[in-house]
Length: 116
Image (tube, rainbow, N blue to C red; front, side, top):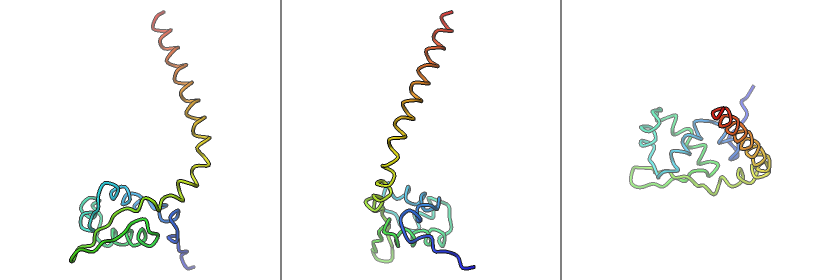
């Protein structure tokens, strides 16, 4: 059976942990493949393969300077993910409020027990 192509959109591309790690590295500064190989301790072919996927979905942009290829993140291309995730924020807020209430209850109980 032929393997399905899983890199045609931003969602699929960031599904791979190694690609997410590369994106995180590139948030700090523009880097060459060699820089990324050194930082990640991965082989050059592995870094290049994942950069190609990220470039295909426009999450990274490549700039050539002499014999070097520099890569930088294109954060605006993550917007579809942010927009999709936005619909779930209402659940996170209530969950955090519940956690805050629970922690306050525990702290009150601990303080009360310490006084007794």
